[in-house]
Amino acid sequence: MQLVYSIFIRLYVFLIWIAHFFNQKAKLWLNGRKDVWQNISKASNTEEKMIIWMHVSSLGEFEQGRPLIEELKNRYQHIGIVLTFFSPSGYEIRKNYPIADFIFYLPLDTQSNAERFYNLIQPHLVIFVKYDFWYFYIREAVRRKIPIILVSAIFRSNDIFFKWYGSLHRKMLKSFNEIFVQDEHSKKLIETLHPNATIAGDTRCDRVIQISQSAQIPAIIRQRSYHRFVVVIGSAWKEDIEVIKPVFEKFSDVYWIIAPHNIENQHLKALTNLLPQKFVWYSSLEKSPELADYPILIIDNIGMLSSLYSIAQLAYIGGGFGKGIHNILEPAVYGIPVIFGPKYQKFNEAVSLIQKKGAFSIKNTSEALVVFSNLIQNTDKLKQAGIIARQYVIEHSGATNIILQRIEKYLSR
Image 1 (cartoon, helix red, strand yellow):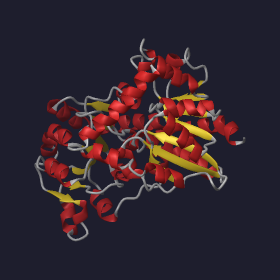
Image 2 (image 1 turned 135 degrees about the vertical axis):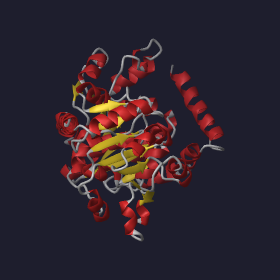
Image 3 (image 1 turned 90 degrees about the vertical axis):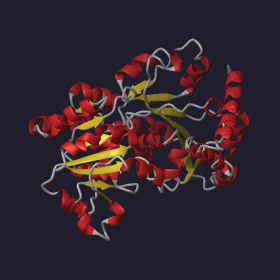
Image 4 (image 1 turned 30 degrees about the vertical axis):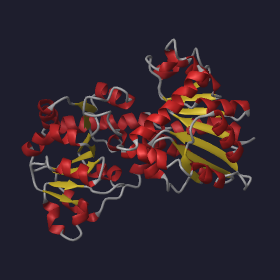
């Protein structure tokens, strides 16, 4: 299996190389790794700090690991954080994250790369977030007797760990000193493979609570939102707007704030071509504040979305008509109901909130009209759904402290 794994890794890189001629993400993946060893050498542990290496796949996993990073730096002044990414969609956005001491792409998972990496970094503790497992990096930690933990993990019965051909992944799973899972179902699934699994919850809940305590809304938006029903459409794709377009037309008195997932020109154009009403770009408001009264405001920057939910009565989260929904906890923390498309099954919070009636899924325009209408026109239902959404976040918070309490023993060595 190890040989098959090594062949697969090299085949994967070959396919990325082919794809980079016509795929921007693949191009970033390759280009970002050109100087990776030069960057890693700068992180060589010369200051005699206790180094903690955290690896995340992409932006979503970073947000799960972020509360741990920040609390570790807050509690322990003598540690350094090395943060690695696999995907450019995470690295390109967070490569300047100030709390981590060093940030770079994870080199290809080979035995020689793993040995070289550990020789340079010399970590005292290794943290993997959620599911991005790499065999040689995990094996090297075990060989060097470096504690390695997995946080915010979720397991499902159809995962490779439980397949007849999943022996290598089962071996990786058993290599972790401790595993922190998000729910009881995950713990039960792996208890025969790893006896040291702890239910900690979702660190993202800690993160969104933290964000909500410092939400900042530009005055020009806050002023226009007073006494209006505000719906924030977060991480929107063209496919989302196609489905909910008639809702804009039906509720023309609603103040719609749209934050596209991708703010590159071609994506913005494809999205705005679908809008039935007048809209204004956020970047235009300072020059033309009178346009703020337009019924649709489009946020053409990165970084405002999580705060915008604080002035909304209802949120729609994009991605559900593509690969999967984006973060629904960000609006839920403010006590507002959340609507999203049909592809949500891999997200525990979405499944749970739908069952509790704090969130709602739509498959088409007809369902969108019904769900939006029921919430916008029914104050009691809107309020109750929002209470449920907020309560979910509160009940699943605290994972950061649970994890830190358990791993303190590794930090005192």
